[in-house]
Image 1 (tube, protein in one colour):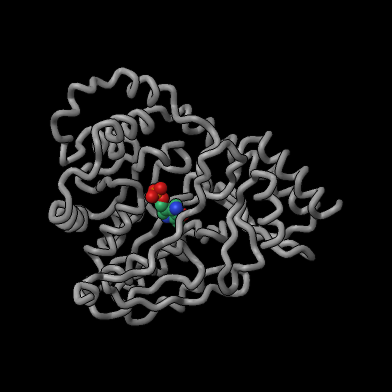
Image 2 (tube, rainbow, N blue to C red; image 1 turned 135 degrees about the horizontal axis):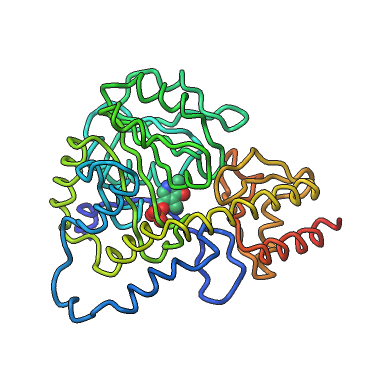
Length: 350
Ligand code: PMP
């Protein structure tokens, strides 16, 4: 068929399974708690008559709330349909050169997919044996750099000094720091946005603000970069964010008390889970995220994944080089993690 040759053929990203039955779902790093009551109330009160009109293309209400919360000028904020949309727009906007974009060999597996679909040359840089980034490896010619901090699926958080070293040593390219999990960690590069004109920091409401289903992501960068991003966005789709998500995102940002409450609960459950997994013979790098990337001393990760799945407990398994001995386990509620641990005890006969 002659049309075949005109078709763009790509290998897509594989998202985690979303079973439509009720299962213990620890495979896509969602928040185990519901969104803020304020979000629920605002959505319930939303006047659906408004839906006949297009939403605000500037997303002013949401942008303003994010800018105020982080004490950043609103001209330095960009929003999108999840950070996947924000990151995809960043790849399309900032990586139009011929030199390779650098990112770690073990990181968010969407980066190479975007690079491929947009025809961006890229090079992966191996993490060290302990899954750490070596800043020196990034001090070479490049068309851009992408670092997830904390990294996924490893859960490892790098110190801000290392991130800053990478940003400052490539002043002629854009450095994206993907902070999808930073709310569960200890540092953020947002404060560096005023200092470095080549920095973009991306964030999401999917994990720490319990809004994965709403699809809300955002980014911070110098005004000039935000302008470039908006120019590309308005060349693809002016109305990316729908009215309910603009409202929900704003309410979620405004309810700081609830955000801190659920984030702290996830962190406490994570620490409990770490101790239990260690007792069962698992080892892992210290996680600063809402998941733990663990390997077992004797049992195969794939078998554990399969047996858990038979029991309706979903964790994430990556059948890829360097990752196939590990399971990525999202942090659920205390009850869910207790159930997981008890099943693991059975599987491992401990
Ligand atoms: N970055 C990283 C490192 C992630 O793990 C994810 C979640 N899959 C995302 C970005 C995208 O999340 P979302 O589109 O839900 O904001």
